[in-house]
Length: 326
Ligand SMILES: CC(C)(COP(=O)(O)OP(=O)(O)OC[C@H]1O[C@@H](n2cnc3c(N)ncnc32)[C@H](O)[C@@H]1OP(=O)(O)O)[C@@H](O)C(=O)NCCC(=O)NCCS
Image 1 (cartoon, rainbow, N blue to C red):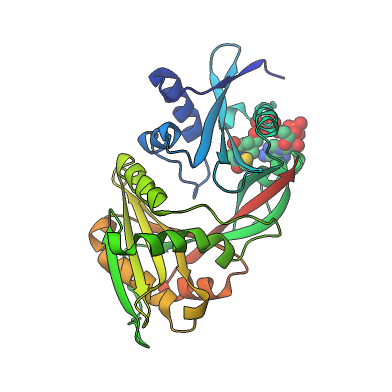
Image 2 (image 1 turned 90 degrees about the horizontal axis):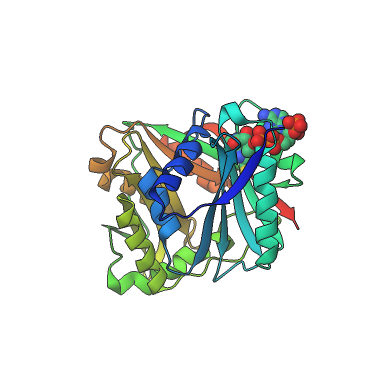
């Protein structure tokens, strides 16, 4: 066993954050795993808007090397008994207990903040049944709650025709949500947990109001990310659904599909495909020169998967959502 010390990250400390991010990036060694850029990660760690308590930890070896890091996120306005945790150990420093030490520190931190459940993610490739990451999670006392399929779309891609019908209309924006939609948009963002398939664990909807929408928009700006939003407006003039396509200005190869949601009462009108195809069209300038769009959906989410397959997405992996009760 290697000697190690666990050190909580001070994200204002340039040198320590540099070491933290270097180890975090080195730990992303699988083909389809994408780390955050340094300024994207730091902006989140420095964000003090009060919706989440996000902290990093470093594993320092006896000679001063950082062998790995971990991140714990505790929601402050919803899911008050839950903590999201991740361990990222540099490949050459694995299998000597660093990952176990990180999870141990998070168990203590989570308990001290009244959290009773840990939530972690671990990925494996599509042709496999699991991976070292999932074996680690199981060894740490987690059980699989839900498997999300990771799909990518190779760019440039030709989109199917999917015009809106049945009296619906589409609108799009980048940057700030138009003020006339902000309250309804906050409601859509809050509903994703309840409206999309989840595992057995009773996750609460995330707390969203207009202030949080604005706070996230500011964070995206600091992170130098563009978020292309397309919404569907129903015949009653209210928001029926939306989709978000996100790119980092400083990272050249990837784009990420974030939320897509069509409200229950508006399903069956082809809106899922219409809004996603429209997002690809209006985000053309952001996608030029990029290689992939990534998307994650519950393996059991038939309608969303049908939409993604119609657009040409192919599955490359699985992302397991793991739960451990404390
Ligand atoms: C998963 C990960 C965090 C493990 O870190 P680590 O420091 O190697 O873990 P530990 O040394 O504490 O391993 C503890 C036990 O987990 C199991 N385990 C860990 N990695 C394993 C692997 N690749 N294959 C099989 N079992 C593994 C073993 O039982 C191990 O005990 P042992 O070495 O005595 O057999 C690391 O591989 C990693 O950073 N992976 C990429 C990110 C990720 O998926 N994180 C996990 C989600 S939180």
